[in-house]
Length: 202
Image (cartoon, rainbow, N blue to C red; front, side):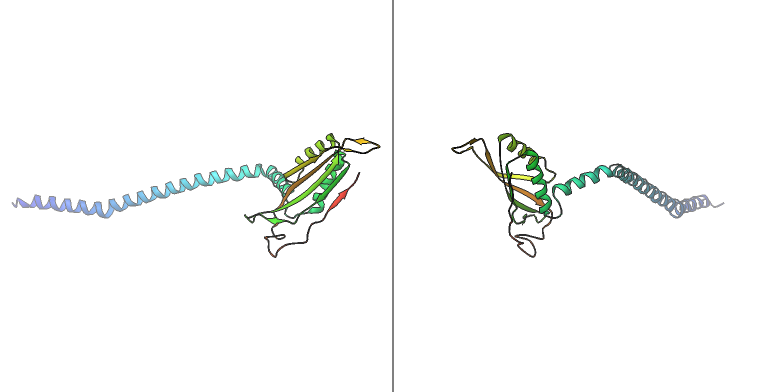
C-alpha cells in the first residue's frame, strides 16, 4: 500500500478547500459587504429625507407668518422709490401730530456700494409746539417705511411785537431706502430727475 496516498489526498482536499473559499465564500462575503454598504446608504438617505420632510412641513406651517414678514420688509424697503406714497405717510404723520407746517424734499436715489439697494436722502422740516414736534418724531420712528435720521436741528421760539408764540422748527435729513437700483447716481443708465419740494401749511 502506498503511504503517500493519504498525504496526497489531504493536500488535494486543502487545495479544493482554498479554491472553494476563493471562488465561493469570498465573493459572497464581498456581496454581503456591498449589500451592507447599500443598506447603510439607504438608511442615511432615509434619515436625510425625513429631516428634509420635517423642514418642509415646518416651513409650510410657518408660511403665513413668513409671508407677513416678507410683506413688512417690502413695506419698509419697497421695490421702487414710490415717493407719492412716502409723502402721504409723512403728511399723515404731520397731520396726526398737528404740526403747523410740514415740508418734504426727497433727494435723488443713490445706489449703495453693495449694489443691493438705493438710498434716498431727504430733507424734512416741521414747525409747531413742543408736543407736536415730539409726536411727529415718534410717528416718524414708527413709520411702516424704514427711515434713518442722519442730521437734526431745532430752532427756538419766535416773538413779534403783537404776540409771543412758543414754536419750534425741526429740520432733519432722513434717509429712506428702496431695493430699486435702476435710478440715480451710480445706477444704470444713470442719474434720474432732480429733487422736488412739497410743503403743507397749517
